[in-house]
Image (tube, rainbow, N blue to C red):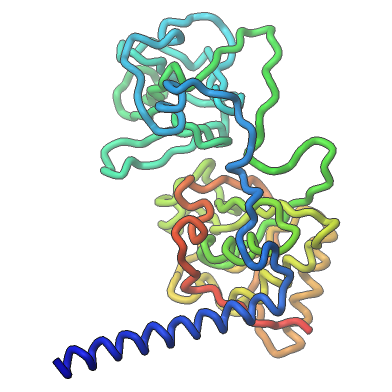
Length: 345
């Protein structure tokens, strides 16, 4: 009985120590940057975007990743010329010139409009799911090696996931997955500092940040998957695209937070995560962002830090898979390789 009591006592002490440690880190972070909503995550996330209204059956397929019965979709036998767009967000997905009859019972395409479709391996690893790259709506699956066409690729798409716009008709405006709106003065910044989960964790809690999106940038391969980036052979960095309100915060404030929440002296790694994809890099969108970052790097170097952070003109940013977005917020965890440490006066 005494032994059991001793074990329970030790467990209780351990929880108290951990709780104090986490509270101390939180307080230190809160005291040194402008948090919003008392440190809570920004409630104005992309979940609040007003996408097109869907029927219950459309929701079952597009949002809940269901499958419509074969040979039942109204677009399966469509042979008209035009563009197939996402029913949820209006993003153009496929051209009629790439559609062919595979006999499978669902619309088939051997190519997509560039950058329109995202690929994610199914959990069982047997098939590759395809999603709208703008809103993550489920489309179907993609198969290769079947020799139906010269491109040797078949996008097997649920008819219910798409809407057809005939040639000559105006395509509807795409409902963006960013919080930007026409006439707004929101600005964008892109930071890479190791695992994008941790980079996003601190940036999305900063006052003035409207939305954050984790993804890949700086590589040669188009529309890369997480598995491909993890090989270290695509050239991409895991990064976070930040949309912020310049009337509330500034690029310089966000860049300071970026430098203060990772170790910018590490080369191609951050903590236990090792690889080129985990490099420290700022992808600037204009000369002002470049000059501000250069100024902050000089300040850190004057303090004795050998800064390894790269500074690169931003190119195409590819959104990461949906399960990577808001990772720590959704899982109730804290970063394991990003810690706040004040570096600027």
